[in-house]
Image (cartoon, rainbow, N blue to C red; front, side):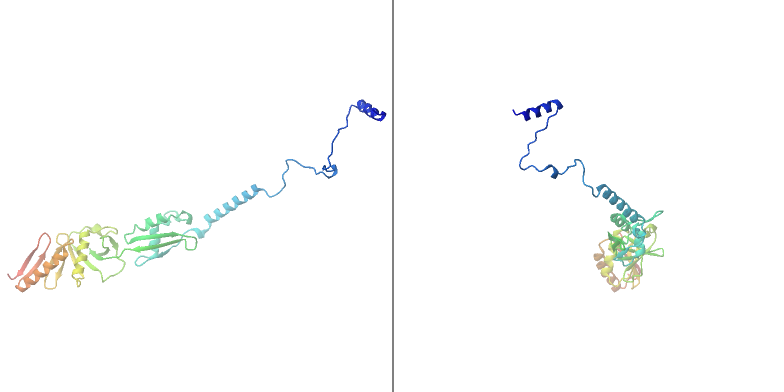
Length: 281
């Protein structure tokens, strides 16, 4: 070992330190070109928490506007299919205006509930309800029941449909057969939504078809349906579906009585055919 090497070892022993030996390959970068790396530090940018909070605030503002803005409270409706009813009547039937609360908000409307309310009217057969955005928030298409007869009782006239359902008379319809009730008749039959005996309605419609010139019928609780024959007597047909046979029998009987010089006072089919005689044999 050379004298210089021995002197270097002696100095290291005296100082108690050793110089580290680091091998630097040919690909190692110089120390001056190495970049310091900071661990655990994220790059700064937009906070997603702030974005989420902004979205929540925006939605709350939109909801507040929806529930406070007057345009979303339903104060009118569009109605199609009207013939006898009015838009105001349908609006009242719909239940959109709640007593003590006022007009409902668009978000609280239930189309099925509105349809159910409208169908409670005896004059409406069907209804379709559509909820949309302003300005036409509620659109309703209705199908009204058609009157088939006019029922008069105690000075009050109502309409009857083919099933005997009682409806309010909306206008004068000369084309409808009128039935004038006499005697002891239930007064509740005049209530809207009530139903007349189906046999009465069917019998009246059959007589109208068989006797086209007939414009007025009478109704008696015992004798049924009848009218005053122009030849001077009353005829009563009862009720039910046997009017075609009874009309044929009546016409043959009346012609026979007139041919024999017999003036009947009444011809009655209720409870069995019979007639009374005013004069003749």
